[in-house]
Amino acid sequence: MIKLLDCTLRDGGHVIDCHFGKEKIKDIVDSLGRSGCDIIELGFLRDDVSRDENDSIYADVRQAEGYCSDRNTAEYALMVQEDQYDVRQLEEFDGQIEHIRVSFHTYDKKEGLKCARIVKEKGYKLHINPINFAGYNIEEKKYLLNAVNELNPHTFTIVDTFGSLLVRQLGEIYQLLGNYLEPGICVGLHFHENLASSFALAQYYIMLNEGKREISIDCSIDGIGKIPGNLPIELIMDFLNRQEGKSYDISALAQVNEAIIRGIKGKSPWGYSLPYALSAQRHIHRSYAAYAVRMGMKPQEILNFLERIPREEGALWSETVAVDYTTKI
Image (cartoon, rainbow, N blue to C red; front, top):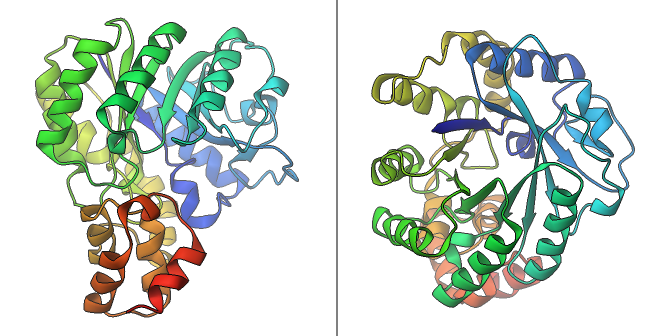
């Protein structure tokens, strides 16, 4: 079974600091529900939130539940980042928002796994989303997968944070999961558009899987997300309709795209962009490309800047590192 998980309100929220507006959040959720989207991610759970009902950021689950609707068959999700939310305060599952997605960095994966265990104990369908899993070395991948098997989550997600995955590398990850991940665990796919390949990667993984395991595919309306963006939901819906016999209603998204998403894109464009392709090709955090753009660097200057940053330093964003290597251009 293949399901689509829309992350417009969460990952797409990065584009406008999650400040969509209350009514627009409702409109987006309603349109996604009418389209037949399987899981709608409503946004982030975060500590110390001065609640603004116009933002897709919540201090607790109950605040997000106001956007759940019984007019469609969609399920709902929220994202927790280990270092931004204390899951000990998470409410017990009450039947509305079923999915909690837990993300964490390589350096705090032990804390992230503890966080994930608490989420599952509270009754939610647990998703484990390790930041930059695609960039882990083989031993790190095996270690994490063993720990994931012990937790037995609903979903384990291949997160390509840097947008650097190539087809062959994704095939290697597929084989690794086949060998080390328990077969009852759904595999999630979260691809970015740095190399303009998110749609192709999703198709390739579906082809490899051949229905062997449940798949959950992250996507967003018009690909909205932190530049350069995500897999556009319209593309993957059409593909699944034609190739997998699905019946998603893409037209249900057209009006909300025109009324809401298009205006956001006009102010903060996303999509393939050379600086972010260059950072992906060098397995460097996208924020270094964003910094270079912000500093007004020309393409050759951006290339020189990124090539000077060692991969081990570029894996995490640091303005100090960025400034240091800017002076070396």
